[in-house]
Amino acid sequence: MRAASQTYKHEHRSDEPEKMADLLGELAASSAALIRDEIDLARQEIRESARQMRSGIAAATLGLVIVAIAALVLIAAAVIALGNVIGFDLSALVIGAFLGIAGGLTLLLAIRRIRRTHLKPEQTIETLEEDKAWLKQLR
Image (cartoon, rainbow, N blue to C red):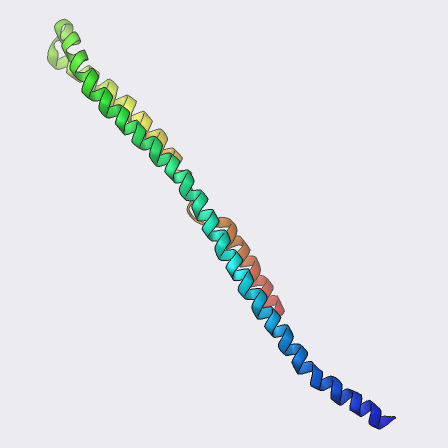
């Protein structure tokens, strides 16, 4: 009986390294897959942030174009029209200030939209921190 028990223990021990190697192989494969998934998630978050930033940049560009067109057309017409009433120098000053304020407000709104966009992949960083803690627990 003792010999059979020792044989079983010997056979069982020889299986342990194979099982350990299999487990380590699975752990390595799972870790690699996890890292690939995290990289994919980071890419997706960055794409989404870039889409949001593009929207803000488009609004800023539109604001600048509107300000430029308004400045070209209205300054000339308004300065001439108002110049007959209050003088050409004062009319140019009044109209230029009005257009500057309108364009500045449009630009400020666009800059706020751009600043609200975060390029940092927050969700991926959080998940990577969780993965790091999980891997430390395995050791």
